[in-house]
Amino acid sequence: EDDDAPGDGEPIDEHEIFDLVRSISDPEHTSLTLEQLHVVNAEDILLDGNNLLLEFTPTVPHCGMSTLIGLSIRVRLLRSLPQRFKVDIKVKPGTHSSELSVNRQLNDKERVAAALENEAIVDVVERCLVT
Amino acid sequence: MTSPTHTIDPIAVLEGHDERVWDVAWNPSEPLIASCSQDKSIRIASYAQTTASGDLDFANIAQIPTGHKRTVRALAWAPSGKTLAAASFDSTISIWEREDGDGEWECSATLEGHETEVKGVAFNHEGTMLATCGRDKSVWIWEVHPDSDFECLSVLMEHAQDVKSVAWHPTHDILASASYDDSIKLYIDDPSDDWFAFATLTEHASTVWDVCFSPCGRYMASASDDTTIRIWKARDTKFHEWNCVKIIEGAHSRSIYSIAWTTADGTLGWIASAGGDGRVNVWAVTEVAEGVDVTLIAQRDETHGVCDTNTVRWCPRPGKQNVLATAGDDCAVRVWGVVPSTG
Image (cartoon, rainbow over all chains, first blue to last red; front, side):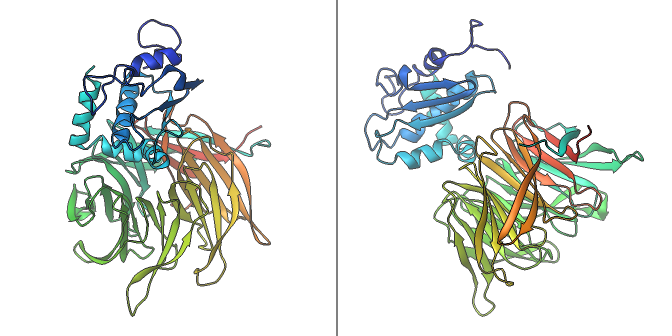
């Protein structure tokens, strides 16, 4: 839909985006949120018109959950934001040993679409998004 | 861009898919166009020229619930126009034909073998072979036998990553593949041995989404996530050596998903590109001393509203080669005419 904001009629800004993702659960520590673990931070969200760049910081540099975290963020934003937004999700530079590889997967539309047809992956993502 | 000489004018919108449309394919011999979607179906529309001025009218004629368990990602018609192949994320390829040329579309074969999502499918120029590719990093070559019998001739594991697309040379049995490993590979059959990759083109900086040959077969164009298009020229008459002769930059602000090349009088043809920025570009390509010149003749933004444009394909029918179809994330297929600007 073409609503400008999920709620209050204000134009969407970085804070709105942060509000959408802060409460996503970490796939490994499900009682903790991405905000609590400092995986997502308001200052790592960059909005330029309809172009959104969100950088997240994995909990540890070899974090095997990074693609799942990135995917959960993407699904939350896909479901909440108007279609006009072009969203890029990346690992904050210097915070992951396979940064390039994780970024490539998270921003390959076809890989994301196929992952979201995989029931096992969808189950994990949905559990992260309950909160 | 200096004053564009052409515009991309809307001709038709084909609706009906419930989810994003990934690919569209024009039947080479009949007035039909097929589309496939994340909704796991294939839709077919027919078209006719109903007025003297040449306007085309489209009508949906078939909706095929393919039975695929996941997204149907890519389509290819055999040169005869009688067979349609569909690649699915469920790791299989389905083959569709119509009884008596006018009845229901029926699945005459299901090709198994890929381990994960199949992403590309293409028939060679004679319709004697089918190529498929996918996330398992492989390219398969199948021989087409009568009665929808497909025999696997070769499984090529040359790419280091996911293979996004395959395209056959227009006159020779040479195959090109585009990959997430940032390269394009070219394959040929060694009659005394097996199919093999004879060239790897590594100049793109990111995933190569699509590749196509020029109608004359002496050139190739590739589209990449690095937001550039590259044009390659064959250095020899056997098409074994290829060099990049042109890089088109700045034409798209996001990943370029699709590229297609059609004939156009007096030139090497027209190239159309489409991508995540929703833009479609059309260039006229002319031959110069060491390669090509490209002139942007038309450009249109928001071809599918705010949504991505996934595929662009030229109509192959005589007299209609300036007609384009696009498939988008807005769940629609759109048909356009590239026509000289008025005024």
